[in-house]
Length: 441
Image 1 (tube, rainbow, N blue to C red):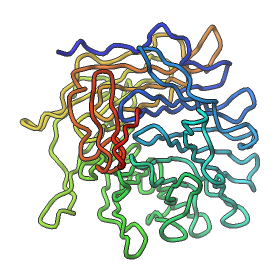
Image 2 (image 1 turned 180 degrees about the horizontal axis):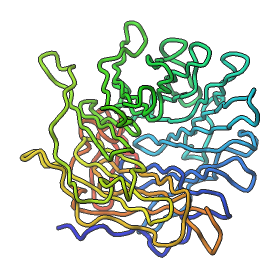
Image 3 (image 1 turned 90 degrees about the vertical axis):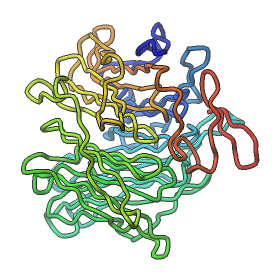
Image 4 (image 1 turned 45 degrees about the horizontal axis):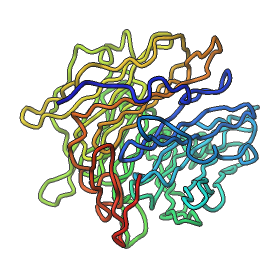
């Protein structure tokens, strides 16, 4: 029986930044089991940002390896803003942005992938980090606005919202890389998949199915309706082909956040402006047609009242049955709502009480979320949190609710696209590798 949401290791002071303006928690990621947590700091004392990784053992968070990337890898003006982690917690991708200092510079960015070397207990860079340079003499594309790694860790998608296919037309694009232990290899068309509307700025959010077959990319710009595009990998032509386009209503800016489940048959797209969240499922006679579901959401919670709150982040679990929503204002405590789908009446029902992890002072609250495979664990980052009277130090929190811990991973959710299943035991998951060995994640 559920005991509600309980903070994991509540007395631990580890999950916080070390200095003012670190903005620890600008993004967070959880392994499938919820036993490994990655937290990004937007800035560090060296000014470049970093990723810290923690493991949960005996209800205590402890660091795993050293933080990364080293300060020499990022420009001192960079801001590490997004991360994602494979289901088994052994591969992490980051995106770091640097905004131009003058009108002729524009913005550029960098992404990198690290893998965990269990024999040395350290994080090792996979190949060379990818930087993007001038598309033309005056514009840079801003690679790393959003990043995603497939659950099996084999593929990453990274976006560049400022990519211009013609002068002064920032359509945006997404680039795809396959990942091995030693290299990143770009896949698909040389320019990736490009937005199709003038100034669409495709790439505000991106998601991949477990094995990377399906991809979802969104933007809330363009016509102010917002756009969410769904693609399927076409191995014959080594590219992603668009399956469908989802557009919001006038001035709804739908596409602020989007996501897709591990099987690639349930997706969501959300609007920050009006608190709208739409759910689509894949089916039809060909099995490849996307249709909107008429799901019902609560209309009484604060995230639906845009006069008081705005949505900060939205995440979906592996099988598409649990969705987490965080909302807040720039000066009021953030609130996180976890909903579970009731298929009998097509209603999303709040799981126990909403979570309000931090009641102290904070500002610039771009709160971040992560979910474990079943939704039993939810991670939250509050980068604007004040710590010891210092501003924007940042904190992270993880809560558990065992009522969500008995479900399956959802069609290969949490590892290997269904090839490497998970066995649930008390306190976590074991992953069974292809050779029959057991990997603790």
